[in-house]
Image 1 (cartoon, rainbow, N blue to C red):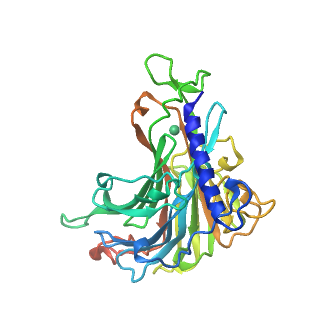
Image 2: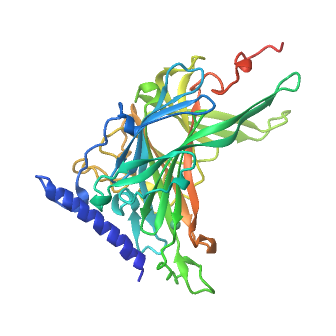
Image 3: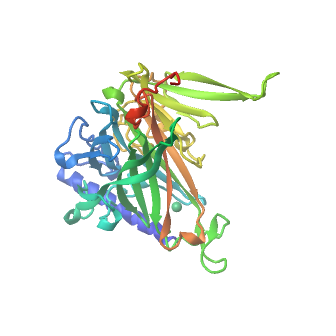
Length: 438
Ligand SMILES: [Cu+2]
């Protein structure tokens, strides 16, 4: 038997218990433990000082946001804005951003975990030691519905900065001047323990407006999960006796954009098709077309395909509509579930659609509980973006012990948010568009 399953089961039981305890304290206690509708997260409008994150990076860009913590999804970042040098006011990017599920099906079909909604991800927030938040500070997080009410306050949220390497480099036309800048990032992360695993949820805000979101899996493989003798695992101990069962980690993020302060935005899909060289041409040609995504969409990544969210009203100083591009990360798509079959979902905002699967909110009878079901033909006026990044974990000898962090995630990058490179040095500020050589 897999004792880790028992461990997981214990975690699940604990979730149930805490919810029951909560329900017992409420006047309308009734129904199954996991189906309780939860109160919505606090509005993103503003936050008190304790829940504010504001970081001016050495290169002059300021990121501002609020943070909060949900019992299942864990860290929630809200009201996220970006103010690069040269912009007189913050530019809002996202209304809210958080994880929406970690789905973990085992290859032998024996079990599948919903780590956020069914295995205690939120309650599993752990204390960080100062050394794992180098150069930063660790905030105390009050975990709602903590399993151990005596330990509901966890030193669990690190905010710090990190150097990224070159933001750019360019040799001047004349002389030997080199324009170069070393990029800086704001990092925000938590560690959540689920069973034997520890997930690092990291948000990285670059000084050039790019946001990277990644989940790193570390901790350890279940020490009891070594019986995959059916060809669905990998031998880890001496010889070929201890087989660790392979499994997938399908991580979902939910991004509620608020570009330029408005939830209204358009979605566009771009595709490029390369054709063989025409007669007399040196190279193949490449034609890029845009498809307006007017209705809810379950999208599939494809070579030379990408998506962006375009502000309905906000424009940069070149009079170009501000937008953010979704930059996919490496993924191994798991085809076993309807909700894992697609890489990105664009759905019309619905407050009760909070999780990519096993949605805990009560959306009424007949309303689907997973993101594939949320896509049902509605017109997109306030799009919510769900991104699915999968990792098929076939364990290796190096996974013990501890297991090295394996990262999976993606980015969003500004496209026409500023009229030029936001870190352009003053000497080059006139080089926008066609410039006559002097
Ligand atoms: Cu794994």
